[in-house]
Image 1 (cartoon, rainbow, N blue to C red):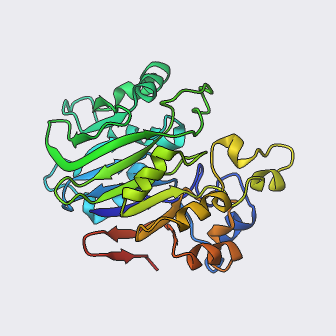
Image 2: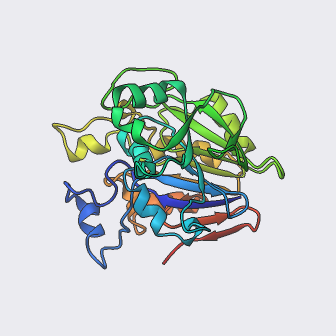
Length: 310
């Protein structure tokens, strides 16, 4: 199983267009020691030819153009067979508009998997999503299902949606069990599994069980501590838990007890000291044998190889 980190930032990425905090400022400088981050998403493949995207941020089209893996084999086409939405919020879903295509092209480009709640929210409340040339599939909770392309082509991957406490979409703030899921990915031929959980307010027993089964765990690293935003913006900031994210300080002891060879934090907010590889927070995480994801990072689980771009 191959994993490509298309983006590793929280909403707005790093730097954010409307922010000049310490890490946004450094990310704008060539020697500022902080890498720019696009909003979080990963691509997964078991054969290097058929790809499934987990999360669809606004810059998805630009992300796909950066990697040779996604260049079509034919004049017109795509190696992206499916997109899996973990959440209905803008920075996790609006990227599926990449697959809208011209009116003259009647082909369906991809399968889009999401919970019934997310699908209903997007298609009923945001009519723009109806122009996507996609075969929309309901993602049931706690069931392994095969992922296929829009024409039924298998991807040789199975996924299971694990409901987790997260947050409602900002434009439809209403709690629901299906608002946020983590995704358990499995290669049925080898049994290798991956857990991708970029929005988590609480590590539930079901999610912890998935961690223990996984060779690779990619977890919510949005904030380092609970009052991070409140300290930077006392008037408008909210706590990490209130927004729907478990702070790294609280999830780190859990990851330290897991034996998976690849444990990784992603969805890093622009306020998080994990942006700075010289920070004490960063060294604490790395000393525990845990990675902080960066854009373009790749993991080949079969070859036990990690590539981190310079």
